[in-house]
Length: 154
Image (cartoon, rainbow, N blue to C red; front, side, top):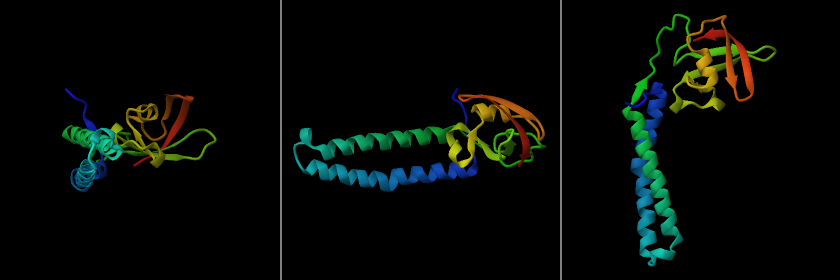
């Protein structure tokens, strides 16, 4: 049995839009490039043809990857957390002597730390799960052990 892919409704919509674009306009553009390269003749020394074939492999691979994700998707619904961190929560934490930071806890597929989305499977995400406001959590990160206090859960 495969692992579920946790996504927010926005994350699912984004993947569906990407899939439609890949299957539609991107495939058509690539098909035109391939036809044009084939018409140039000798394929063994045709760099345009080899690049187009390589790009086709990446495109088809990404399509298969998105379809696999969407086959096993579990949508993270907004629900009352009763003050406990769960997948889908927005959590504000604070380390000693640092400004508070807010993270959105999402599934691994949707994680984007630069934009404040961390996976529930990441060290900090795991440390936050099932905690309440006021709890102190500890996470073992590549940079060492980090302790932080949970300020707010949304």
